[in-house]
Length: 236
Image (cartoon, rainbow, N blue to C red):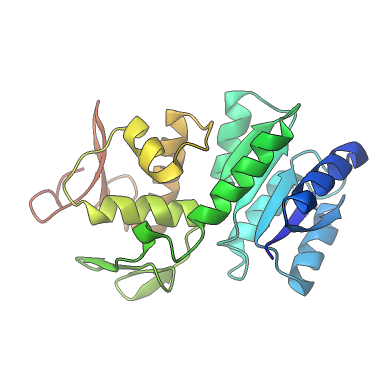
């Protein structure tokens, strides 16, 4: 049974989500405090976190940031649910490491669908995630969910890993932002093409020696992104 942690200070929202998620077969725990959420996760690690941004004490963004900086939690999918619906708010949430973003008021069916989609993407048995890839000095091992660059282990979130792996499986092939959204995020998404830029930037910060002059994940201006092959490795 998959475990979900809801971090939300509105009791009505917690009650609604808990009832419907448990009805779908999930084990659900909830807390209204960011600091307590981190402590609870150390006692029992969830499979996914549903996180409000506006929390008393430790904010949702800070919780998200700390989760992504902690090895034991860095791969856990994070679904933000927030009343802040502007694109800038979504981008900030994604930059902090969230995997998806839903605005309030929301459809419970949509939230359940997003949860299932994130859990599918994080499943190491997914067909797309079976092929180990080595390109130059980078090794992407789906079964271990590990990325090493020049022997250095790099921690990626589930969606960062999926995006990098997809690009590396097709070196030299250029994908538009919409193509990447379709192939990596799938149908259960409301993120925008700009979200792809956020994830690419985060990946570059983790794997590239010089993120501003990338060796591996390259921009094809006006088109999209590609993973370098031997003929294009020196391109920016």
